[in-house]
Image 1 (cartoon, rainbow, N blue to C red):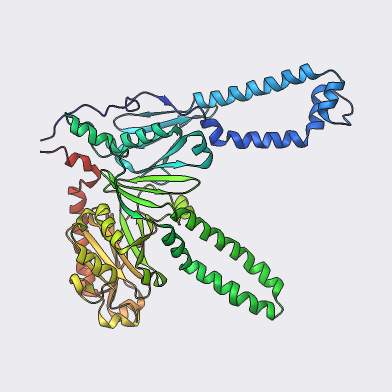
Image 2: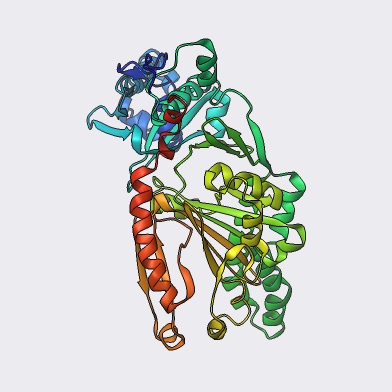
Length: 492
C-alpha cells in the first residue's frame, strides 16, 4: 500500500510566486547593454554634449567645455537621472521575473512590455542542469535549466543563488520522481535532503592525463596533423601557398578551437551516482552540473575509436527527450561520458539502464566480443559483402527489457534501447539487402545522436523481430514505472 505523507517541505514548493536573484537583469544582458552604451557615449561625446547643452562648437575635451560654460551642475543632474532611469528599468525587469512550483509544474514568467510564460510539467522533466558562467560564479549565482520532453520546451530560471539553485533542483527531482510527499520519520526525510547535497559515489572521473590523451588520440587531431604536416607543405612546394592559406587556415583554427574546448570540458569531468540517477559535472571557468534521473535515457551508445583501443577508453552518448535539435547540434561535444575506462563503463551502464545490473558478461560481449557469445544473433555469412571486416561483430541481443546491437571492427560500437522507450518500430530493405536476403529493423526513439538501427539481420528473423518488438514495446510502456522511481520506495 502507499503511505500518505505531506508535501516536501521547501520555501519554493508552495504554489506561490517567487522572484529571481536581483542580479538577474544584469546577467541576462544588462552588462552587455551598458558596455554598448558606454562605447557609443565615448565615441560621440562631443556631439552629445553639443546636442544636450546647445553649445555651437565643442572644440576641446567635452568635460572641459562643460566646466568652462558653468554646466557642471546640470551635467551631474543628467547623469544622475540616467542612473536612476537605468536602475529603475533593471528593478522593473527584476520585479516582473518570477517563478512558481506547485504539485504539477514549474512555471516561469518574465517581461515588462511583452509578458512571457513558460511551463515545465513535472512528469515531462528529463533532467535538471545547473550552469555557472564565469560572471555568475563571481557573483555567486547559477542558472537552472529544466530539460523537458518536446521541441524547444526547455525552461530556464535565470538566476538564483547557488544555495537556492541546489535546493530548487532537489525539490524538482523529488516531485518529478512521482513522490509527492515523504514518509513519516527522520530517516526518510534525511534521505530526501541528501538527493544532491551529499557527494555521492564517483563512477567516472576523467584524470588530466586521460583528458589530454583522448584529444591527442582523436581523429580531429590526426586530420589536423595530416593537413599541417603533409598537405600544406605539398601545396607550398607546388606554388599554391596562397590557396593553401585561404583553404586551410580556417580549418586549422576551427580544429584547434574544438580540441581546446574538448580538453577544457574533460579536465574536470565526473559522473557521480546519487539516489536520483546520476549527476554529471564538467567545466573549469564556466561550470555545469546536470542531474539525469532514472527512466530518462531513451537510447545509449558506447563507442571506441581505433586509436583509443590500446588505452581501453570509451565514449558514451545518450538520446534524451528535452534536447532541442539546435541545442544538441551546438553541444555535440557534450557526451554523457566523453572518455571512460572499461570498468567505468560497466559500472555506469546499470545506473542508466537497471536491466543491465549483474550482466557483466553480456556487456563485455557487446563491447569487445565477436561471434555468438552471450547468444548474440549474428549477421548471416552472406552479408559479409556489405561489411567485409565487421560482419562477425554485427549482431543483436534481446534481454528482458532491452535491445542490444553491436557493430564495428575498427570502430567498436554498442547501442542499447530500453523496450519501454521505443515509440514505434519499422523494417526496411534496400536493393543490396534484398539481393542478400537481409533487412534493417529500426526501433524508433526520441531524436538524438544515437542511431538505433539493427542492421544485416536475416530477412526471416528480421520479420519475426519486427513483430516481437512491436508487441514488447507496447507491453513495456504499459507497465514501466522507472520514471516514477521514488514511488517504488513508498510501496510496501
